[in-house]
Structures are given as C-alpha cells and as structure tokens.
Length: 458
Ligand SMILES: [Zn+2]
Image 1 (tube, rainbow, N blue to C red):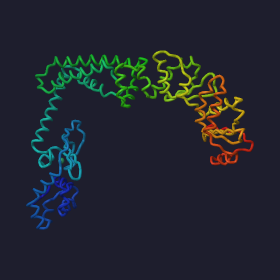
Image 2: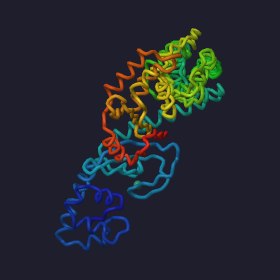
Image 3: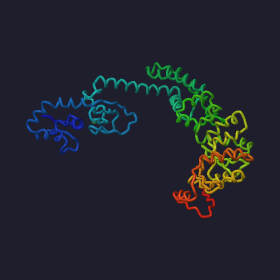
Image 4: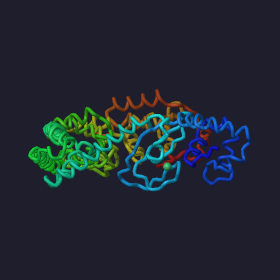
C-alpha cells in the first residue's frame, strides 16, 4: 500500500516524469483540491498499477527529485509573509527556491519542508551543513555589530552613511577625498569587518573607536566639500554630478575629479539642462559689451538679436557657444568673432523675410532679381529673373544660411552681392511662370494674378 503526501504529490505533478504515468497523475489530481494519493485512491487503482506503485514509487520519487535543484536559500530576515508552495505552510523563516531543470518551473518552498528530499541537487546533508554554518556566521556578525554599537554609539549608521557615498550619483569627489575614501575603506575592512568575524569577547573596542574617528573625520571633510560644491560658482552641483554619472563619460568625471570643480577643460562638456541655462546667464556682461540682446534662454539654445539689426533674431546653440566663449568665463576675453558666432547660429524663420529685404535694397541685386514668392512653411524662396523672365527658386533655409554672413555688416559690397547672385543662379530650380504656378498648386497654393509677394510666416 502506498499513499503520497501533498508535498510529494505536488512535486511529482510539476515534474516532467509525471507525464510518463498519466494514470497516476490523474488519480493524484482528480477530485483533490491539493494533489495527493490517499489509501482509498490507491485501492481504486488497478491491481497491476497497485503492484507497480508498491514496488517502484520510491524510485519514481527519487527520479522526481533529480529533476530539481536548489537555486538559493533565503533566510528571510525581513520576515515577509511567504507561504510554502509545496505544502502551503505559512510565514516561513527560511526559504529555498528550487527549480526544475527540464521545464524551468520555480518554487518557493520551506527549507525544512524539503529537508528530506536529499536527491534534489544542492539539498544534501553536507550542503545543508554549509548553509547552516553560513547562517550561524551571519548571526554572529549581527550580534557582534550590536556589541560594537553598544560600545561605540552611532558606528553602524556612520558606516552606512560612508558606504552610501560611493553609490551616491550626486557626488563627484575630488582626488584628495577619493584617496581618503579609499584609505578609510581599507581601515573599515581591516579593523572593523575583520573584528566582526571573531568571538565577541575578543573584539578590540579601541580599534572600533579608532575606525569610528577615521570615518567621522572623513565625513566632516566630505560635508565641507559638498557645501562648497553647492555654493562655489563652478562647484560640481548635485544635478551636474548626477548628469555626469548617467552620461557614463569617464573622461569627464576623471577631469572633474582632478580639479574638484568645473573649469575651462570641462565647462563645455556638460549638457545638463539647468547648468546650460545658468551658464548662458553668466554671459550677460559679454553680451552687453558686444551689443547683443538676449531674448530668450531655452538651455540647449538661446535667442539673440544684434543691436545693429534688431529685425533679425538668431538661435544660438548653447554648447557650441560655451565652447566658443569659455575664454570669457575663465580668462575674461570679451571679443566675439561675428563669423564664428554666425557659424553656430541659425536665423529664425520669422526673420527670413527681413534678411531678403536687405538684399532687395541693393541696386545691383534689384537690377537682376525681383522677389516673386516666399514661404517658410514650404521652405521656398522664388525670384523673378528680369533678364530671362524665369522664376528662380531656392531652398529658403540654405539661402538664408548663405547670406547670413553678409547682412550684419554696414553695407553689403558689390562683390558680396555678386556672390549671392551666383549662389541663386547655381542653386536655383527654374520655372516659367505657368509651370511655377502649377508647382505651387502641389502645395495647395494659388498665386494671384498680380504676382505680388505672398508672405507666409510659420
Ligand atoms: Zn512546505
């Protein structure tokens, strides 16, 4: 006569081997809320099956266990409510996670619950002894920690705080503090962690006190440094440190560590939004000295107008500008090279037509071209060539990019006008008037007969 307990039955049903004995699996699971084989179930089996089971269940269950291995044992120190997934026992202290090596099913089970399942891999008596030993060691360390805390009040919290420093993304230590951190870390290892593993009555409290004062000393220096980081003009503020850590730029972090603050080597390598925005504001006086008006500041770019062309707004790339004028921030060089500024700027769309207007004031340009159509929405600018009566259309953005270098000067020279005329001639797509009207129809734009300029500003 064989009866099978719930936890054995459940392990069997979840194992691949059960598929070879469908008659047994059926009997175990049918009419049972939890799988098992009662004496009554056994008697219901055919005589052949009864005989087979009586002689072979031991081996079958041995093979069942061989499908499983212990993944890890968790002592559940947090005392979470965990129930054994084999027998259902509640609020377990010690849990083993076992995994079926064939079907990958994982179960959280009570460690004592499977103690007798010695054929589960890593669940032998020797293995359990090892776990027990490790557990005792952990308990000893906890008791020793408690002992240290009673004698040197605050040491546990202090060590926690100290350990947190290396994981804190809002901190980039300077080299001096980093070296000190490593030194104290070694002291903790040698004079504290090591003491926790010995017998309580052998613990040298003098050593623990010494560790305490080393950490305390470090933490005081750290706090002064962190205060500096927040208050100094080029201090590595917490959000900057977080950004640098997240960007994984080890070279940048190294450089910041070397100097303990932002300097001319690192000022243009940090793209943290708040930092960019604040750095733009540091150029206030430089802008004033160079007749530049700051209109708006969007951190990754900012908008300016130059006092001699108030009708044209420029969008400047912040990072490029910091790169260009970091010599102002750290060496107080107040010159701005207009061409270099224009290289990193784009004229904003609403100023496009004002740029074109500048050209139309040139007699030289007017002699050849008359503006015919312009629309920033479809990025198109069209001139009527008075000589061949054809429409010359150019990419509006590219055209503005080309002429932006000429329009901030007092007067555009004839040489420059000729350059612009050549640009139009060599880049334009040419249409006759009928074809051009048709071309615009593709954009749902109808030209009126007077050929007046249509000015769409988007
Ligand atoms: Zn259990």
